[in-house]
Image (tube, rainbow over all chains, first blue to last red; front, side, top):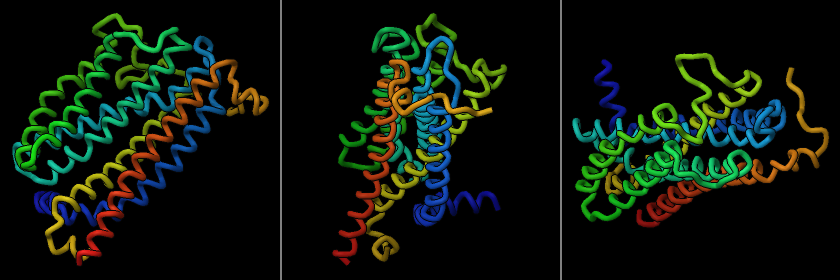
Length: 242
Length: 55
């Protein structure tokens, strides 16, 4: 029964119509909660004793960084599924997520860079966390340009899936960089294994921002996959009748 | 208890000298979200329009 369910969902046609139904709920729920999280974080969360009000950038920087890494994990899983089981929807996911991943990683880098000015006194530092995130951004750009460089889409799908899996090595490096090396970037404030080092009054709006931003980005990813399905399956009867 | 951290609109914008950084990041943040959303919305609408013209 499960196998049948997943097989059905792996069909581009089923995915298109199911995601069409999910999109408005996910999109509007995420928008409303993101607005609540941002207003709470920027206007109502207490001032940080050390960083002052500049720390409020956390409500945009951390969700962007979290989404940048989560999207790459999504790409890696989809690449694996495509290479092993040849599910073409997985190849569409890899292609569609690349541009959104690059944009979100750019957002993480630029917000971190701006935050660096009042906090560290510099826009940029070649420290492990920042450099590995820059490598993630370059990986996303690499996936986009590699796919665009092929005329044969099947070949392009295979090559970017392999490249995406190779690039996955960077994700644990980003995560652990603040522990493995002495970095200017602060260690993680929220971990699964220990109590958060951030005050709860700051943590609650941060959690809302992280999950609502992720929800919003997933909603946009659904749209991007729909567009890829329309392009790749344009000769199919069901698309012509849309 | 949740309290508003700024006494006036001026102090909200200024944020003790950090307002410029926070607001610039917020603007870029919103621009990326809106940009991505509109990019795919326009692409899908254009595709559907062309598809309808062909059929």
